[in-house]
Length: 112
Length: 113
Image 1 (cartoon, rainbow over the protein chains, first blue to last red):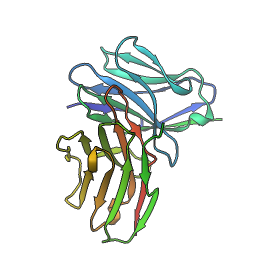
Image 2 (cartoon, rainbow over the protein chains, first blue to last red):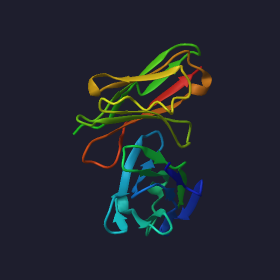
Image 3 (tube, each protein chain N blue to C red):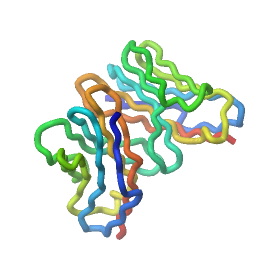
Image 4 (spheres, each protein chain N blue to C red):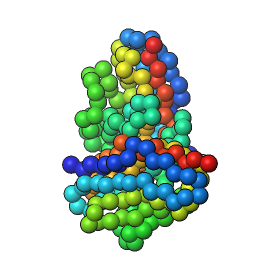
């Protein structure tokens, strides 16, 4: 069965600094990997995905993520954090079917 | 085009009452998912519908919870005899063939008093 781990409950970063939100996964076969963001009192918004191809994928709001097959990781990154990036971030994996598994979420706080 | 919609956006009910939560998926999406999210926490999978197949109910926490999807489109999640621990945000998502990511609705915040 597939699983997703987000080892950090909380990530704090100063505005303007680079940020990383970590995600590791376990899935049989080739993974489909996703990042979603949730702002307060809102539903989840899709940020980016890895299906195949380049290991570095770019998404919305300047975010990018790097797929690393050997480390089974899909860390979310942004070169320069904004206060408005403060939110709850979820990593998710889908196998060849339509079953999605979400990580527990990481709360990102960007400090001015 | 229109996204996933859910109604009501907020629901306050007394303990022991039944509630119905509605989800309208994106038109043409074959798969529909229900999740529960406690305050600021992760997503708890509840149930998943795919086309005309039998739904995957493995995440329903008790027999007080049920869901149906009529005509392969709109879905209703029903909670009978609500308890205070049912208080949460209930999120619906849909997924379509040819796409890869889920699209989420804004959620229904349920408060059981």
